[in-house]
Image (tube, rainbow, N blue to C red; front, side, top):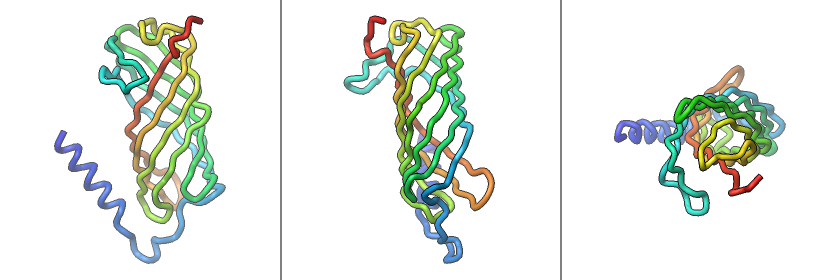
Length: 173
């Protein structure tokens, strides 16, 4: 754990350092389109936040999120993303949906790396049958922090840590 903290601190320090004068051009700008394919993994978090309910079932999954976005200011990107969850614990199941509205606020727009805050919301269908997600249609909410590599041309890299909350809002449907 200490190694991960040290690596995160080094990345943030490097990202905050100003580059050479020639590198100080604006790299993120209003009107820029973004597209991406995010992948990750997740598990149930037994320490939930107040108001969100806590998970008792041991759930594990891998996730794929195709994304399309557009910068509406030099720092704020709105995006939509698809959600594909492949559950492997407690049982094999699948989930799919769309986080129709998401956003990332980037702290800088003129550096090779920039930290950001992210959040989004949408709907999710799942075949997983556990008490916490016991409806076919659920809501999804995600929020987190990340760091983005901003290249002049071609693909970049995003590393993001997010909480992905899935809930049926205690519905009876």
